[in-house]
Amino acid sequence: MPGKRHHHNVYVIELDRAVLEETRFAAANPSHDPDKPCVYVGSTGLTPEKRFENHMAGYKSNRFVRRYGLRLLPMLYGEYNPLGYEDACEMEIELARMLREKGYAVWQK
Image (cartoon, rainbow, N blue to C red; front, side):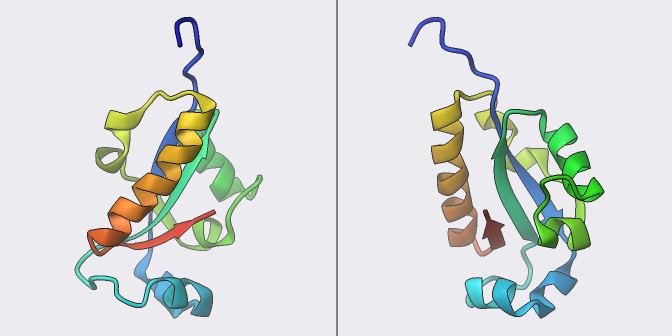
């Protein structure tokens, strides 16, 4: 739609492998490839960098990211940004699905 603002983003955060010791995380990823990273997938109206900072500071954060977050992985999401709000919400789900299919251990809000 012309004139539609595209200021939302999807993002992927690498998580320390210790997250696999968390029962809920491990149960959500029973067939992950141990050679692939553990990741968190989200969407935001902020920049991915600012959203990562907020997660790590405990502001509206996911506990897996706060405890195990290592770094952003822009090579997994950069090509999709920026997006409109609805597209970002849909892409978050799709990106999590695609990464899971490739063997990543994924947590998505």
